[in-house]
Image (cartoon, rainbow, N blue to C red):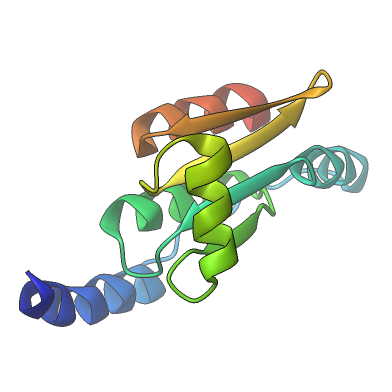
Length: 120
């Protein structure tokens, strides 16, 4: 499996770099609101994970600047994901809202959340 990842990872990253989605255009005030709302979100991810790439592309398309946390390079973030989120799976979106924290797994669920909350 490591060999497959070693080959496919760079291909996925190159494809993502070449075919970046176009960001949603907003007026300055609306974008500032989105930027402020995004401060309460953290995406736990791996760089070449195809499902993580899918979420990052959605973030780019919706122009939502979410902090990404690579769990491979920062063991403390992986430990936090496991301890607080309950599973080391990525992608996982940490959502702070209404005085609580929610952990959202699965790229499709994260994409639906972002689309619902941030689409124009």
